[in-house]
Length: 110
Image 1 (cartoon, rainbow, N blue to C red):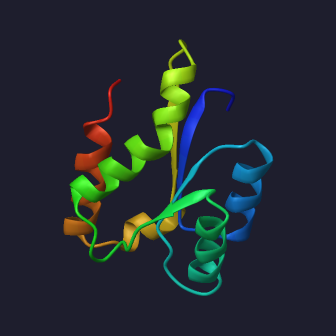
Image 2 (tube, one colour):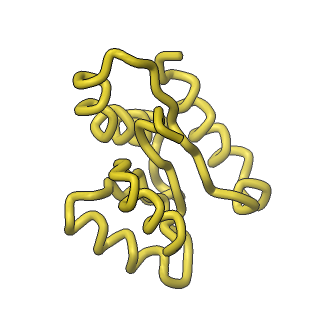
């Protein structure tokens, strides 16, 4: 979407390719398989902030989103959106982890 300010993803190849193609900053929450490796590379290229889903706090996620969105918020007078794409993984997440994410997203200006 043209108004996307940040893309919160697990770090699978498709999501990373899409974010890079559209020059959208990434907040990576890698889980398994190639995701941690992909997130290491995107972070090294300064295309992503990487968080650990099991240990991050609401504040960690909120700070990462603010950091990634700052340039876009300052340079654009238009409203934007944050795309949160963790797919079916959310249904397998503990309620505590889901609440951490929900709390952070609820604090982003609407």
